[in-house]
Image 1 (cartoon, helix red, strand yellow):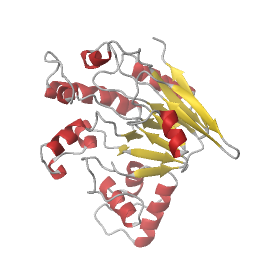
Image 2 (tube, one colour):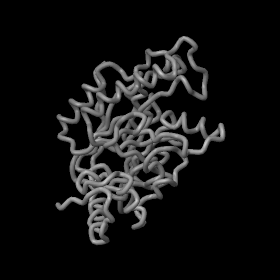
Image 3 (cartoon, helix red, strand yellow):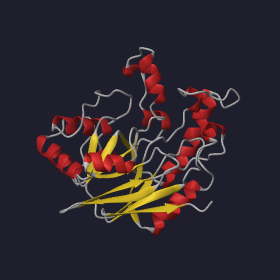
Image 4 (cartoon, helix red, strand yellow):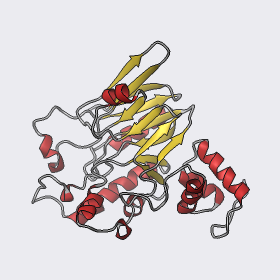
Length: 289
């Protein structure tokens, strides 16, 4: 594939090839690398062709955060639920890597809440916990290990990921002053969005507002999500001419940390990952504790 210099005007026939690559499931990061362009240039081309939201049209400072990105796949996909860095459970990364290899996965999705942002929570914070700077530094350090293991991934935005942006919004700060989450976390090849679609019939989202089986029944689509740490299951709904499934995953967070103290009296979190086999069959694999 011929590559284009990043700062030249992209010919229209090349733009069409970029759109076709996007429709085949290529991530913006992959396409940018293929054509020697920036992710923002790719987003602008896709916007001009009606495939994504405008690069600057976002309620939070995240590239592609309002985009319902679509992809098609026949391979196996790994789904990693809420990490809440820097409070990731010991051994969870190694568990994720092992499952990626075991199930011969081709793609990786993170289901939101990459970071916890406990220091800036809307709920009570621990006065003896890490400072804002120290927590963020540790979170970035933890996530860099996941980034090294999975250098290309799609990431759903969770409510914890958006805490700083929500607070800036409430304080009256324009999003133009806020750095994007991929810049802050130093994960330029990860693609962020509020939700993703696989094969036009499978919704991948964080899960705020509804558990997976309710979303499946009400929206009549396949659903894969996280958010509810103590819940995990696969549930099917079968009709006269089709069936849908809901895969609810738990988390990868260490519930013994002070950031998880709010759930001390809740049910125990379910530490697991999900795999979608050949784009059709969901399975859940629990980590040995």
